[in-house]
Length: 397
Image (cartoon, rainbow, N blue to C red; front, side):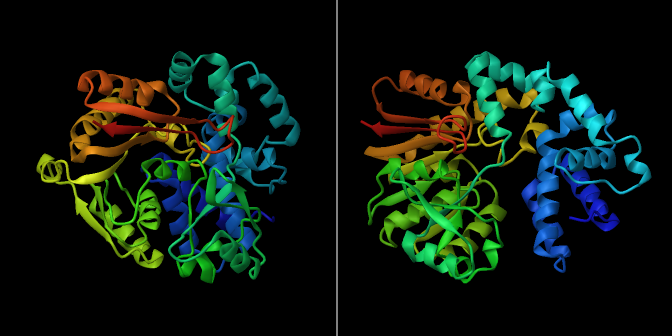
């Protein structure tokens, strides 16, 4: 790939939006690629890979580069990935030998070498132990596989495999644990395929696809997805309902629910009702109304850093306590929407026990027999190879 000045300028602008304006990397990339619609597929891929590479390795890159100049950091990342640099002033003094030498200097400091903030490293070691934490971090610094979830309202896995093959996109089944998951080997432009436009699949990590099946959703039931966001798990629930019954997808952000509606239309899910959570009254009106409740609660995201490397720079130490409080508040108040005899799943995309099993243990103790733990799943990026997730299936007695 020949490096050019306009590409560097776009990367500088995009990284500033992530680091300084707090924008999400995936949205920044989406906006930039839309603005540069004339870029070739290789240019689009190179841009996205560079941006994610810088976000993933920013601390190490700054150490190697000697300062936090974004242009110099980008140049360092290009050298680390085998790309020759143009003879530009921003890259003075950078060379393959220089980068290799500085990388060796960083090898003795795990947090610098693996490019994570010291406070996150300390937190992970405290909660998981040094060896377990280090294995997880190393795994999360590897680019993630691309997984699809086949929409059973419109297709079978074989249908999607065949449809993508006509566009020379190779997809394969993953395992019986995730029967509707496909792994895509060649990251071509999936979103321009008829299969995507027709709602035959969604992009969703295989680990994430293991959460909704715990609910044992049956057609005709009333289900609530109380932290729905833009609807990845709501659409998964809808596929089990088969457009029979009712799914109420809730969130505090209206714009996310608007995106969910668009995705539901494409997916052919006709029984989804969206509700903005404006106050506690929104929850109280649904007391004991649901056969199944999903609480995919806000979390630190310290299980999906390979997918969202910008999260580690956005998160601050003082945020963690507030996140834990919010999780428990949601668990204790939103659980009231579950009917007696109904099922509820509490899930996060974190691998920290304080966000996961410790919250459930506290909840069960407080409820004193009103709820029972049926099953837990812990997914780790260094074990299963998927993103890190936790889910607990609870039954209301």
